[in-house]
Length: 407
Image (tube, rainbow, N blue to C red; front, side, top):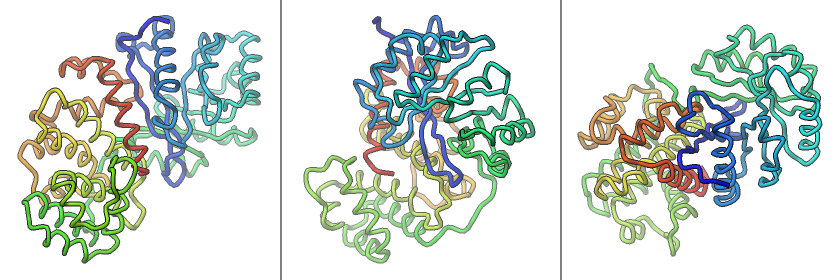
C-alpha cells in the first residue's frame, strides 16, 4: 500500500439527547480532494488512515470507549480493507448512490453479522436507500440538505424501523431543540463543536474561585496564598487533585497536597490544570461534555503544533488560547466579559477576541480540523509550514492525551 502524504485526520462528536458524547465521526480527507471527496483518488489515502489510526494508533487513543463512525464507500466495502478493523464499537457509514448492485447488499449483511453496526448516511428515503433499512442500526439525516420540516417528516416515517435517528449538521440551539422534539436519538454538528453565545449569566462561585486562583498563579503569588485559596473550596480541591493524579499527566508520583503540586510541577503546569478545571466547574451540568473535550483538544493540538515554531512560554499560551476559545459558550458570556476577569497577555487576548496576532493561525487550524469537510485544513497547515503527517501526528497525540484525562 502506498503512502498517503496528503491525508488529514479529524473527528467530530456525536451526542445523545442530554448532549453526552456517544461517539465520533472519524474524518478522513486527502487535501487535494477535500472538497470533492473523490473516492477513486482518495481511496488509498482513506485506507492508509484506517491502518494508521485504528491499527497503529489504537482505537482507544482516538475515541476511548465511544463509538467510531467511519465513512465507507462502495469500493472500501467490497475490498478486504475492513478486515483491518475490529468490529466492536465501529459504525460503518454507508455512502449509497442511486444505483447499487445486489452483491453490495449481501456484503453489508455479512458485515452486520460480523459485528459491525451500519449507518445510512445522507438518507433521503429513495427506494435504493430504503432497501437497506432492515440491516441498518443508524440513519443520518442532513438538516442543511432537507431542512427541519422534511427531517421531521423523515424521522416520523422511520419510527417503524428499529434504527437510531441521527440529525447532522446542526448549527443552532433552535435546530437542536426541533430535532430533539422530533424524537431524534443522536445529534451532530457545529452547534456542539463551535456554538455561539449571545447572552450572559452570573459567574457561579466555583468559577469565581478559579478566576481568582488563575490570577494568583499568573501573578506569581506565594504558595501559601494559593493553598489558602484552594482550601476555601473543597470541591475545587478534590477536582484539582483528581486531574493532577490522572493518567493523562504522566506523573511518576502521586500528588498529596497543593503545596506538593506547586513544589514539584511549578506555576506553569498548575495554571494549565486550573484552565482544565475551569471547563468542568459548572455544577449545574449545563456545559455539554462535547464542548469541554473540543476545547481541551484544541489547546493540546495548538501546543503540539507550536513545538517547532514558538518558545516554551508561548506554547503554554497556545494551550491557553485553545482551551479558552470556547469559554464564552461554556459560561454563556461574551468573550470580552470573560477576559475582563482574567489576567491574560495581550497576544492571548488578541487571538481570543479578534482572531488576530501570532497565535491566531494555530487556532484557525485547530478549529478547521473540527470541520467535517476539512476544507481549509490544507491551506492553513501550509501557511504554518505543517505537513499532513505532522498535523496528523499532533492531532492523534492530542486526542490520546484528552482521552486519558477522562474528561
